[in-house]
Image (tube, rainbow, N blue to C red; front, side, top):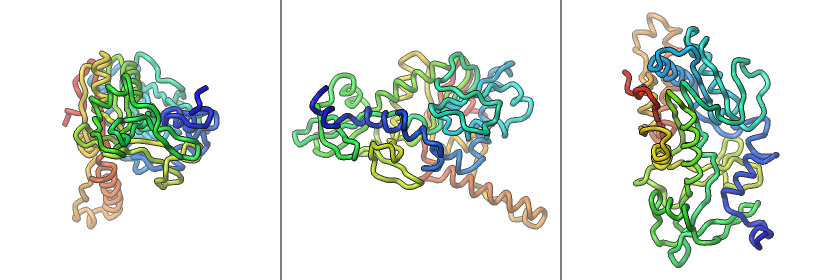
Length: 339
């Protein structure tokens, strides 16, 4: 045991792994993620409806297989997979094998059609959808010291930080390629190598179909200078403290994840979209209904107006609309290209 470990100091990756996924970890709590933050799934049923339309496009591209896989990776309490099953046409739903992948126990009352797994199944023919999963794959944090050297950030259970050893090896190579830090004291980055590996492994489970990751994201030319590590507790952003009291998350370098999966041979290529563009391609827009509907069908006008408001939230610039979608197809044309 090193002196750092004995004193309670460890890297952010190990600290977050324990506090999120350990025996008493944050993601094993009964209220689930929805008790602490609101995702697109919780914002509106329109999101699950859009994923259902995407699954239908994948189904068509696969020539309507006898068994169509739907894998919800990082499923929370099964909200998305349940919503998608509800939104699917009956003929498609009858052929779907629905799987929710999550470390927590199966929630009571979940649709019995959903298989609850702790690992993604292999040989998927259909759609693997990872909504806000990669941002909770723990990563190391680096910070530039007074000499201009990027060092690993160590943290104790109370959230106190200090700098450790210089970043080296594969982690240093990742920083140099994907998040180069100027030699300016205090600049920070999250080293996304574990997320690259996680996504490449997840994408490799798709034999034919589509793999999609949706998350807070940034690209090489827009990396934030001081990183994005943060916490969430009961709907509010808070300081990241690895004591099990809050979620710990950081935005995702989706461009690096895409390249990792392609380089590993999992998938031939990737497409990066904003959520606004992706949902628009799937028929979700914030357009208001015509005023004439108010006089011809007032009840439907009110419902349409509510849907427009929900769609506007899902696609809003500066909000959910700026989420990144990483779309990788295997053996089928990219279904996001369809009108």
